[in-house]
Amino acid sequence: MNVINDEVFAVILALTVVGSVIPALIILRPEVTEPFTSIGLLNSECKIGDYPSYVIPRDDIDLCIQVFNYMGYPILAQVRYKVGTAKDLPTNTIPSALSIIKNITVIVPHNAEKLVKARFPVIVDESMIGKNATLIFELWIYDNVKNEWVYSGEWVHLHVRVAGVPLT
Image (cartoon, rainbow, N blue to C red; front, side):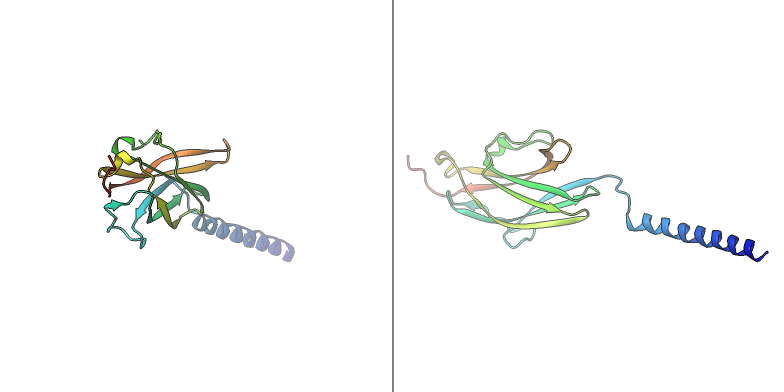
């Protein structure tokens, strides 16, 4: 009769242990119901606001880029920097057709952000001197299944005035 009680006790103990582990796993690994990424543009001190309004051609501009990941897994993210005009902005489905001036690639863990302070060269055509330019920062994610970079549909931009006097 003692053997049955010991066996029953062992089964009850095993069920208790398993029953307490499953809720703990659920709590430790929350489900990602709506996965997303985001990109933000910050000033040279990595704060919102006080962005430069003028740039000098062939000079560099200091800015911070913020990339946030809530996809449920780590991502390899790339920020592609381009310079153009307001008509060159990307859309949610199509990146800007402008040439890439600079790439910044970072690994971002799940539920984390990466702040990247960088210098971005102001590469503009001489015809843009004295006019407005748009600095464009697109977010691309590496797709391990396709083995290629995929445009996320997210971007930030900064409209600036190009300082100087045209030589014409």
